[in-house]
Length: 91
Image (cartoon, rainbow, N blue to C red; front, top):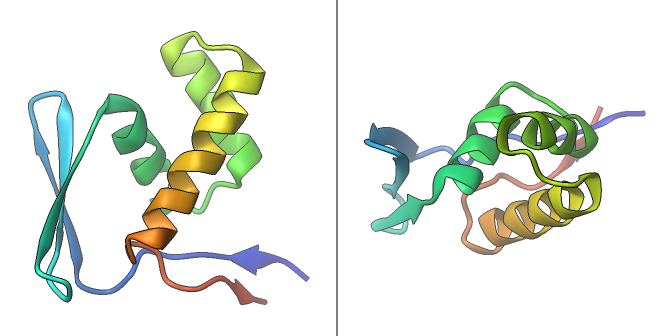
């Protein structure tokens, strides 16, 4: 059984220079993501696992695997807490 996640409906992403802006139309909030969080957000849309995103983060930003895993875990948790990701479903 695999577990999948998706972006919450009503969240619109727009790039502005180096940052990614997320407009949550349901909560009427704007989230300004730094390059690392923006990268993670975009990779989650590609249905990548956390481990895959962490590896890509290592390659893109030249960080250690431990740091990349921690960044992905923290960022995904924050996205969830802010209501930007839909609940995880089992397939």
